[in-house]
Length: 391
Ligand SMILES: *Cc1c(COP(=O)(O)O)cnc(C)c1O
Image (tube, rainbow, N blue to C red; front, side, top):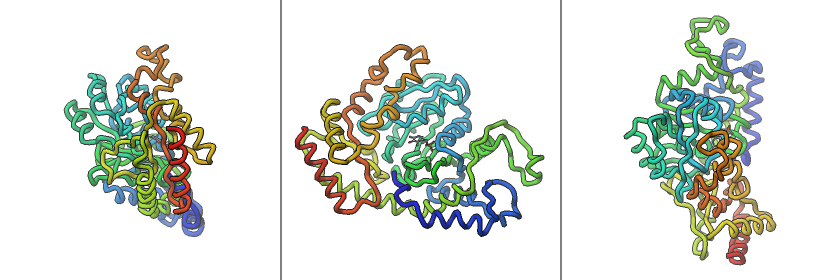
């Protein structure tokens, strides 16, 4: 997830330009003359919408905020049920909780994304939205998920926080369902430090989310801001022009980032395949993989732990699995689920046994953009050596 590998001169120049050309106006709205009609956040929204081929986009201060705004736009209310998957960053569930809605967790399959068969069993008359997550840039099984959602007339939000640049059957991840979100935090494909983007083809959803993100301001061009019109209340999720400027520079690098990741992941996978005792994660559309992580399963949790320790001793980290599983697996979130009657006091890993079984046996290797061939070979050699010794 490496926008941070390529942040530098271009981004710095983009910030300087704000001071040189628009008098240091860092606020996304208003000050039209003072800023010489230069609006970086707006430009970034336009550019990213074009990039993923969608009608509307909204850039806000975090991906988590974008996710909450998307759910607001979809009409999720307190007490509604929202289904997402067991393997995701905790933010997905926090966005649901923020609305007073109830998170319902579906199991994952060997793609490590939402298991459509389990999704079917989780739908009730109270289900108001479904959030598949394209974890680590790998597309979820969108055809199956969309068909199930359609059958029950439930809107779908794609959590594509980790998947900007990925596709599913030729369409950008995040643009297949009713709405999608991307994150531009410091670990994602492109970064603006913090930031999140909501994309949709639905004008009402976009309007409500935009107004909500700015205290309900309609930004009505016929009135000064102090006399602005409104039809909803909201909150402040606005992002500054600095992030807009950085985002524009980063977006120019996205194709390069994805291409490099794909090249490096292919190399790693080719050189690790054929090792007895490992099985790679399923990729529902291999051509669409944003390719920032290579995941494989071993036979059991003890082996996975031992491999992670050995890799660390050789100077190689893993990415989230197993090292940060506590932030990415619902089965560890007692601080959330023990507040709900259905889960109170339960061993959550036993609530989602299929997910537990997969995630506890998984090793995720980071795929970086600026890695040299020598470094890639070193990574291959170390992983091979550790696996040969351990398995
Ligand atoms: C990063 C992330 C988010 C939230 O994005 P932030 O910009 O960090 O708030 C949401 N969902 C997933 C799957 C993520 O990885």
